[in-house]
Amino acid sequence: MNVPKEARDYIQGLKLEANAHPTEIDRWKRLGEAASRAAVFDPSYYAVARQAYARALALGPDDPEALRGAGNIDYDQQRYDEAIAAYEHYLRLKPDDPDVRTDLGTMYLSTGNATMAVGQYRAVLAGHPDFFQARFNLAVAYLEEKKLDQARRQARRALALAPNEQARSAVTNFMTGTLGEPAQPEAGAAPSKPATTAKVPGSAASSSADDAAAFRSAIEHYLRQMPVVGAKVEAVRWPSPLAATVLTRDFPMDRMPPFARAKFIDDVKSGISAAKSRYRVEAKVVLQIADAASGRVMETVSE
Image (cartoon, rainbow, N blue to C red):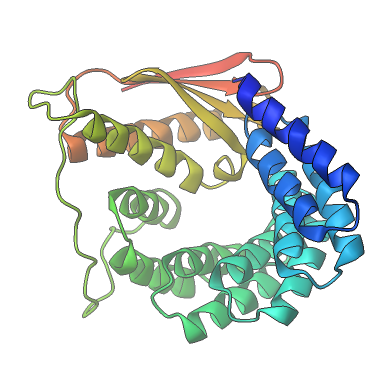
């Protein structure tokens, strides 16, 4: 998706203002934030965002917003070492931020340092024991360390903490497909309260456009939670209520081994099926997995 002209003009205006007031850090941060959002649709804006946050950090090396913004760009572009440096600096200033510390753990996990990732996730959970993403990621990190008992235990706890159906589906797929065990929460754990069932236009019982948006959001959230591909999902376009194009970056499906490709497709179908069941959608849903840079459709998954 191209960035709308209004957004391009807005970013250009922020850029002109920042250049006209080069010592005002807030202007550079606003430019960085706006360009980061635009980069989801046009990756060329990552360069604008990166330069803006670099100027902000030159003016305020300890500015938390600029550090987090710069770290998030590095996270998105898989510049793991740079993201780690930015997040660690940020956390020296705001050590109790569970989101950033969880992201730091994920960066360590992405570099193959599961032990450091475990340490970060455990630090989050020490102060925020119900923080779902850190609990789920801890299960994945323990699996990387080949500590299956700990992985299973944390996955069961994550299942009990899952805040919505999409999160529950992600944990369920991890438990049944990767760990090879039934998807059951830890004994004695209180399961999270299920959300109210909604209905989607196109199903047997239609309600409103808000319901359709909830269904689409459920599928997008599931995709972004998936191992490997989740971090590579750049955007999800919905030209119709039941058809979407999933734009990915640096996700070479063509080079995946046949068994891995089949497993990926099955996992996507499981996510679609779970969302359809949750929102009572009966019609076929079609997702095109495409390369964001070229627009080439690499796989079409229907369920």
